[in-house]
Image (cartoon, rainbow, N blue to C red):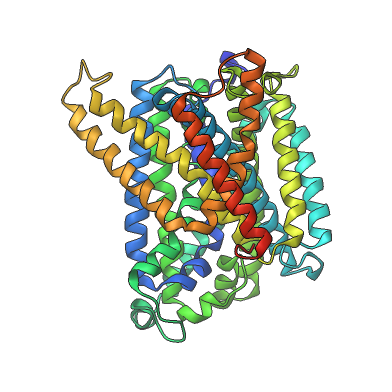
Length: 476
């Protein structure tokens, strides 16, 4: 990658990067995922919590982009600046590995979508599905190696194209709106197991994190912006637009079908909902849009994955080999490492009972630590008054916003549950070998006293998680 003027991104391109990163496989799975957990009333509360919390987080990203323009690596840079080398590394590792797993979920859903028409693909984790996904991984890999400018331009076009099926879905379901059916579903509907309102809302939290991943996309690419102020603006524009789409996609099916019917549908449930409303062509139309959408999101996330790993290497927090670039200024070594990890996880889906749900939830939980550290850094900066010398009146506002973002991310860690926290520890603990490798290269001290404690907690969590998998206490 390069910082040459020819590769500077406009406000529209940055916004497209945010939208392209966020509108992926998650939005197409929302009807069934929410219907399994709750009815319209619980969904409204869940989206208020998720939308409000993520808006606070988006505002933190916006404030940090404006107040810390020198920290141009986004998520990872903020964690390191606020809490030190090892927490910064964990943020980079979690964000990178989580993004890799998210890319795996894209391939699983594409093949599951095709499985509705070609049974050989099954639920996305058959041998045939894995082989086809593997071919796709490496086709994208070599395309990206040609240069970020070409890939970014393709992403902008794909972002525009993939919104059309979603808008058509929304418009058709508005015309099919049945108020009496919506009222019948409102408090939970019939034919679904009872659950407390809190448990219903909690069950939706990880999927809301998944569909909001990408909110920081412009921040990650901040170094390529034509105008630094465009980074925060693109984040907010992208957030508001995508949130509106996601709420409508979630709520409208409750007015077209019973909650039990939606909950029992095959993923991608947006396709099966539209098929039930307008006929088979609806499933074909949405499925085609999904494939375009997911491939576009996969492209955007491949770029983000490689960028995070490359920047961490350039700042000497990852092994220096990942900082190397090819003749097109693409971080080739980081891209190779990213796609090797994606390939391994794709192969592992063969042994999973519900590969898409597993990858979705694991992607979400890996993002929680990075997001928490960003929110905490924004809070600490506002509390100290750092960078508020010229505009002190904004300090209280930003302190409240960042404080709410911290509370929200802590709630997400609780909502994730012990199972997925332990699974994430299995990746964080052993993944620290990359940090140790980098420190050995530089002949520097490995950890401070506090960092040794953090490392010990990660290792203990990993050991407990591995034991849980081995004994069957944790199932995948």
